Length: 357
Ligand code: EPS
Image 1 (tube, protein in one colour):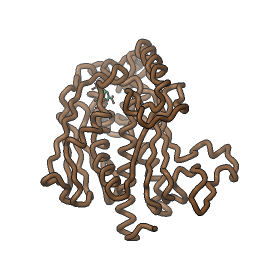
Image 2 (cartoon, helix red, strand yellow):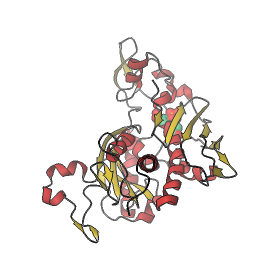
Image 3 (spheres, helix red, strand yellow):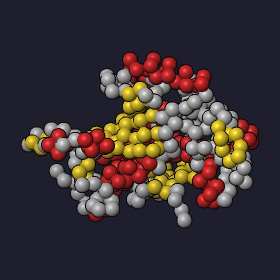
Image 4 (cartoon, helix red, strand yellow):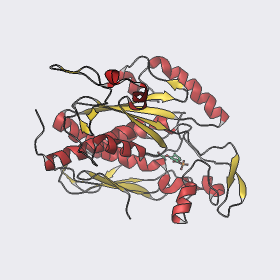
């Protein structure tokens, strides 16, 4: 069984572990002729990287991506694009004391139950380090979507712990702070929250939203290829993701039909509770997805656990862990949105050919 591949016509296969020599991916199905460079890919990798502020993991990785194949004279050739990043700052000794233990709340336990062995160093394959390759592949998809349809994808932090970011929505502010927060007034609040949390040794969850504008109507397919189902699957495949909403999401439970339906006029829709998707197919409205990330489970605060022999142990995790993985998730949700949309655009072309006027 291989479950390291995502997508159908535009598909991404990732490989590698957090403390192995390298991580990488093969991006297959990208049409020929798209201009792409390692430099462009590095841009989004830098946005996701560790060690950029005191609020994230202090592991220092250069994330110096190499394009090994599929690009000739700066343009994609239509053949598999292989990307590789060497791991240069793994510190495996931090993990010595959890070699035989399971961190409560972590995939350690289920990996062991499933495979009967695990690479305990840095979480191995379950590490958030894997998301570098999603982001790298996402740069290719973002660029293709922009060139084809003018699609623009932007993510942002919508909530950190108890702090909702639902005031000012300044799109230019998102890249100006370490949180991808669109409200400048909230940045000091988030900083104070994270500073206190870091001192306490605890962690927190977060909500990250993403919007895709200028998406053509018609992406997605009934019944088992719904665009919203594939987006939910994509977001839920990100480490620490625990919930996904499309459009009004769980708020639709309390809405009336007269409130939820998005009325249509000759000039377009009057609202977007659907989040840009009706019947699993894009409507041409903005696609809006929200993802919940749980608090990091690797904590220096002791807790009760068991070892691989079932003995009770006290678990303490050392290392350079993110106190909130959601802080670095914005480029990752953008990448997953781009990969799904590009895959569906190619699938639509393969079956239907044209896009509706
Ligand atoms: C991670 C733990 C930390 C993070 C890592 C994800 O690694 P380590 O314990 O080896 O310092 O730094 O994230 C990255 C390296 C990255 O590039 O995102 C974990 O347990 O998931």
